Length: 304
Ligand code: IPD
Image (cartoon, rainbow, N blue to C red; front, side):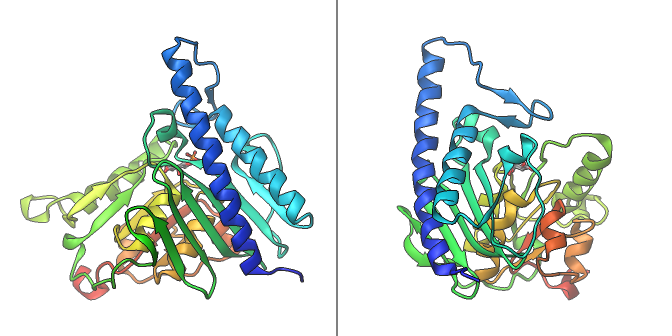
């Protein structure tokens, strides 16, 4: 096949930065429109009021999709908004670009800096190239299989990830975790998320049975950036029930190349963390909707 991962990575970085410009311009326009009292008609509610798409998501995805089809006409494309618009998405061994034009749309509409464009590429059904660019932080994360993961940012310059050599944590009590609620808020899913959240933060000594008393919890609203924060070693773990391949395809490569682990857990609760049931990312995992991402947390013996 003509798949050249280095060439694909270079191109993906290039379009991610250009997409970042479109996102920043879209944001500036939104702010001006709001200040001019223009009725905000661009907001489109997808599944519910927590699941949004803006004009900028659609514009950015179209830019990325067109650029890819021009440069790599034989490659396949799976994008969040194309899928939402009814395009079929099946993963095969051909190169597939799996794209979220704005991961963290929710944050984007609130002018929160934690959003990004996420561009993953699978080859032979495996995530092989990952690029995540956060336009409001001018921060780029990228990786390709076997070549390491890197950051380029005003804060850290250009470095290989993780930023610092991870120290094995004696327990989750020293861990900074990220969790997301996602937009599925019905009883089945929400009960699991809440139960798992309670066990993670609860203080067993104060009477929360099974509580792990993690040091800190964050919820930044972007699955892709959460993966990158695990890769850089800031978060020790991130987990979510209910995200999609475009949320995590790029992040999965970045995590794995930084020495982290990605699991599509059946029940992503602390139990699955501490039973060492870590898997590798497979096509099934990629197409599944449950992700657990971890680096360096705990040790199954001390956490049991
Ligand atoms: C969402 C974000 C969010 C996660 C949701 C995703 P979007 O992606 O990654 O963190 O909780 O599950 O759908 O809709 O902003 O592209």
